[in-house]
Length: 152
Image (cartoon, rainbow, N blue to C red; front, top):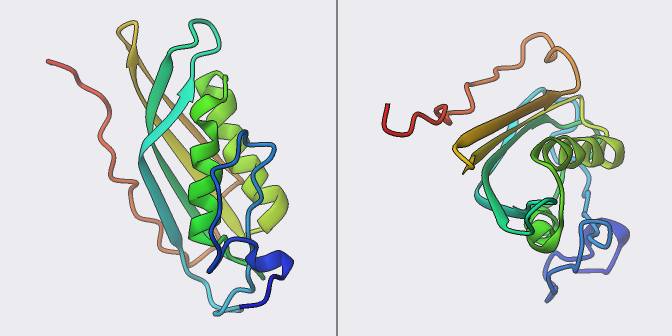
């Protein structure tokens, strides 16, 4: 496979980027351009660092999007999400920042992200962001992640 800007990682050996800013996402052409469909990525073991304590924060991240002209290649997305392991950021900043970067670079028809953060200090924090109303006719299933209930 050629080493074009759309396929920096596909079929290549790629190291985990040191930071989200250094991560390069691949956006190949949408093979079903003109079709309205939903793509879902789930990262149930996402990790970043608490900006206050430096301790790891864990989340289940779910990304849903309706592709436009391009799609995000899954290996590059995995490397991008993995680059947050040593990144310090509040739950809100991390979750919304992931969604905004994908929208800025991929330009999907629609995108939403759910960040279901596991409790630290006894308080779970769930963060949701989307670009607006989903396109008419797009089937958007529930993200399937239950709210944290603890022992209740």
